[in-house]
Image 1: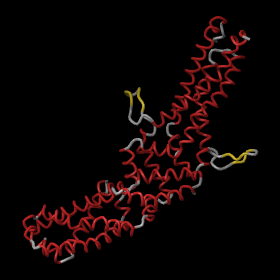
Image 2: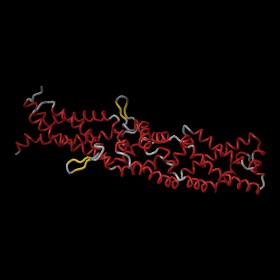
Image 3: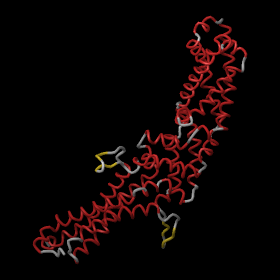
Length: 412
């Protein structure tokens, strides 16, 4: 028995080593797809994860495909309850009107404001509040009518993902954690299967290149096969008593819910929308809309003009309007940070996205994740193959090195 183990035990180890190599190369492939978030090393001997190094491309593709195919920005805007937003802004702004007007006038025209009678100040507060109610209503209608000119959804998503390099990873893990785990652990299964074939070939054909060659096959094919099983076949197919479909596609409803949740809670928030509109590439258009509504509030009522324009002159009046614009921007940004308001709007958009993504045909739905693996897939397969070949050389040296030397295995 001991002699048999001494003679053939090394052959029995080959499938287990191949399984470990398959698991290891697939694990490394996943790590290299998503990590590191920043470039590590010195070019050309360095690496940055495939996803972090292509943030703008993947984020843009996400908007063009997944978001675009469910209706894009138009579908999102139509989902928002504009009346609810108006009410929230009014409820948020009304208690601050007196304070905002008081601070504004003290900053711009302190002497004039301090010398106004209390009844006049009170009247100004009342008029501004009344104008504010009408102004918010008109402002929201203006935003709804011209949202496509004021907000670039692609800019919002790309900017947010670039600010947080790990955000696309979070989206991928939330959607495909099970598939990524399958990709890793299936490497052990396929590696073990290849290892059995490897041991048999090595037993009958003990040539120096057999173990490295099969190691290359283990490292490259286990990753490639697992990816194919995740996304193929697109449609359910009956094979004997079984119905098979790509693992990712079989979980379409579940994945749609997870993607919609993360996207609305971490990417498309009211805070990010407001920030992009006020500071993004189209911010001048938003400022023009805000400026026109603030000017209307200050000019439509005679009492406001009497207290401002007639008292401070044209130049002072222009400065006052600019200060009012700055104050208005500040309050809009503060209102957009309210977590309760963000959560309520996110729930509506999330439900819309979940329903529409879950009803997509499989060839469109797979684009939620497929581009991540398709991009530079050949690099990951090649690296897996190289590492597998190294594992084959290690098997040759550690398990059969002495036998090769003693028995003179054919090296030709």
